[in-house]
Image (cartoon, rainbow, N blue to C red):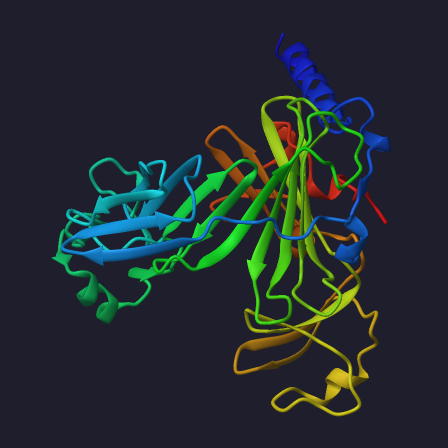
Length: 376
């Protein structure tokens, strides 16, 4: 009986492995996504007209004045989002009392963890009371102000940002700073600029402010498709350079079991210089860059990843990526989020970058099994 049970177990594992290697849905192999290297080929529209906003704070009250009444509006506090009631004249207000900071300031706590001695569970070490601003060190039980926490270790607690208000009218949404200055504009449309041919496309185009003429550029285009399609979403990010070149792109795949694989691909062939944990795009020149070893200029432009110097325990390496090469992956299912490894471990999945989830045991596909569907 034991031998028979073992045989059945081996067969079951083999079936599971074979199933995990199958395409996620019919037509998967023929799916294609049009992602050009230059934004102009997508023919996206110019930035739409937007609502202007002016704000005023006095006696603990923030007053809003829009150029016309939006369909909806809200304010982002450190504690969360609050909907605003704006009248037909575009006017509204909200009190500041009871809030930790000004609107638009994001509060971030350290991701450092510790093992709770009472239940043996891993917990975040620091927590912030959003109303008082007091930081609690759960490991020691001590409490201190945000300023004291910053002086102890600036990574424990930090505040930053100016994404204060947001409002929408029709297909256009706008993000404003505390002064009412427009930070970004979102245009929602059902046009599938990626030409996948999939039904149910819903696209968001993001326009951001820049110092160049005409003052705005398209930073990203993201499209989602109806649930159950092999390709669930596509996002392409474009640079604010002379030709709005492709900076990065990601494709999300539906595994048919309420799980999603998001794979990031290399937009073009490029060699990147890594010094320690810092990455710099390396453009080959005839002269050496200050502080970098002379051997850099002797490495072929198509060289694979290699360490070329190691001084003081810091690696200096060239990392070469080919166009549409798989760079990384993220798998999400319910409350579970896994990230891919790197280098020789790119095909493996990890939780919290430490605990490995074997592909065969959990029925997972390696991120390296998702060839890019990109066409130009």
